[in-house]
Image 1 (cartoon, rainbow, N blue to C red):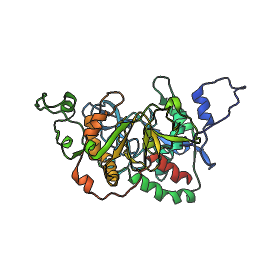
Image 2: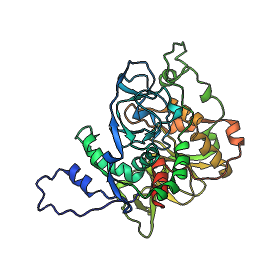
Image 3: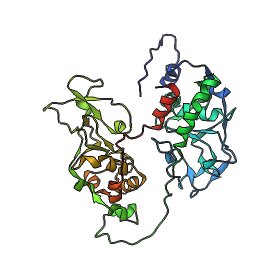
Image 4: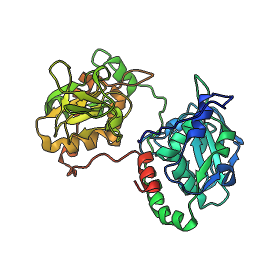
Amino acid sequence: MPEAHALLDLRRELNWDPARLTAEAFRWPHGAHLVPLRELATRLAPRSFAEAGAPVITPQSIDGSTGSVRRRSRKYQGSVFQVGAELRNGDVLMPRLGSGPTLLVSDRLTGALVSARYAALRPVERELGLWLWALLGSESGTRLRTSLSRGDAVTHIDAGALLDAAVPVPALAVRRDLLDQLAELERTTHTEEEEPSETWWHTTDLREVPWRIALATPDRSPLEDGTPLELLCGQISRGRETRRHALTEPAPGYLPVADVSVLGGKAPRRWMPVTDGVPSVIARPGDLMVAGLGNYAYATVVEHESIADQHVFVLRLRDVTIGSAIAAYLNSQRGYRVRQMLLTGSTIPNLRSADLAAIPIPDDALRAPVEHEAPPLPLARRLENVLWGN
């Protein structure tokens, strides 16, 4: 994501609130005709209520990279929108807390309950729904939303400031040229949801099964199906701390630092020297990198040398030809479920080296022909590319 810079003259400013100044300094990438959002959409109010146990779509239900609904919450209790009652096709849902993906209401969500943690916008013309969904969900739209956030410990988007915000509205002909591409991107968010967590009882022998595994799942078969990663690797190394020796700009003799955000598709933000005096783990072409922090593996086959951050594992494969197949499995729904069983930590989930080494790769995943492809870019970046022709 390109960094935005602005020079502000504060000599005549009576209010130096950083949030207000940041919002006023925000600029869209291109100078299209700008219109206040309130002229394009109205804000809706929730009129329904959900008891605990009802499946509700919350901002945490959405995959931060793909923008798809991953799993509905059964713990949420409070005000909700109902698709088909308060909400209709073409409405746009934007998280009021954080900077997660936006959601476009369509037939696939008919009957769904949506948390009031979303701000619901109804375009004055239904055709504008897809445009606003893409605009507010793009990287530039995410920066706009961040600039409108208020609060210290917990930030939230100010509704009035949101409706006052100026958004680009190109000529209708220009907009329509982009709609097919935007609709195709929106369809990529229509993926199969995971089953919600249910209450279950079972007995197990805790002398043979670790407590955390027994508590994570009643069915351990996915942890026993396949060849453990450690047998497919000659070496599994965790990266080292990089911030102390890193630069924020590339320099001769320095390699890019691969952290979790880089594995997720973002550009490198730090560069490290390759010297004997600076301990580092270098990922070489053909190696596999896997995130050690967070819910998602973001498994990536290395194409160019880089230095692994402390939250990234480097796997040196015995057979580099199966790297793409292993990465595809770790990034799949099946691989995601296995990873969830092994994660530790409640606030920030992380994966231990021993647990990564024990992840079994099913034989059918290794046999499946997989093209050597880079992981798809995050939805916000893909929207940015389509909207601004990057």
